[in-house]
Length: 103
Figure 1 (spheres, rainbow, N blue to C red):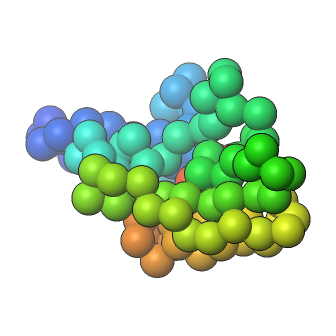
Figure 2: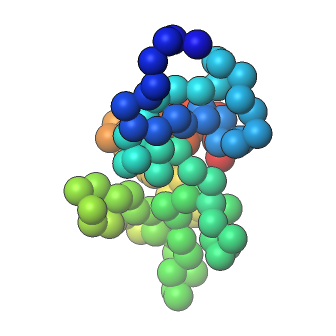
């Protein structure tokens, strides 16, 4: 559509690989593309970057500079998810799963 091939990869904003509408596609580096992802099959919380500890509290973390950074431990899932969302928006910008429509 633009007359040139993307430099890196093509990312689907909403995370749905079958949705190839032009408004859903954008150029992305491999790292940016990996940030816009859905929870994996083994994810029991349903939210990327949020896990429940052995004591029953919720922990939020985010990957920065190839390391997991713990954002904190919280009493509720909603608090941990909110911390993860805020960190995503700050560090990942338009490639955060929350802003792009993926959950």
